[in-house]
Image 1 (cartoon, helix red, strand yellow):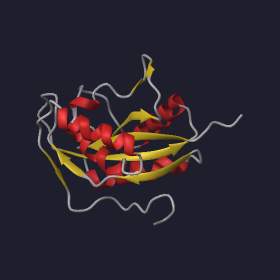
Image 2 (image 1 turned 45 degrees about the vertical axis):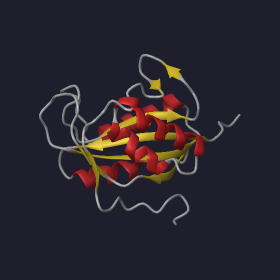
Image 3 (image 1 turned 90 degrees about the horizontal axis):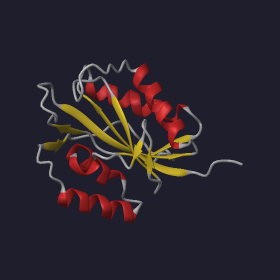
Image 4 (image 1 turned 180 degrees about the horizontal axis):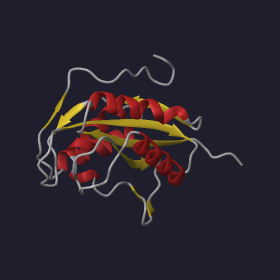
Length: 174
């Protein structure tokens, strides 16, 4: 039996090296598996680091995917992309070349040692919520949920949109 297509949402961030290039590479690698179609990518946001580690500002985006991978298969692929882009996990909430987080996988709730969906930090991270708003327009329920989370977040770190996003034409080449 073939897995049904599910909508998944990712948060992608970077603050080491050529940040725009790092984000572009991550987005370009996502659909290298035929079970993944990138449906939407948000504009890039420059964001203040959270967690108390003094470091360079982050570039953050959100991506909406349609996938036939299971949540754990998708997580494995995200880790492959991070390793390919030389992700190092040295300091908790510290600098990174690339960070891909699975935020939502359909309407599923998953609580495993290696994966929690929805991601538990979503309500506390404007750098996740603001880009998410940009990629949920075709999902009115999710869009309303994200608007509500933004209205109620306890995160007051600054975030600003860059003038342009990545080179992304959408799944149909639009």
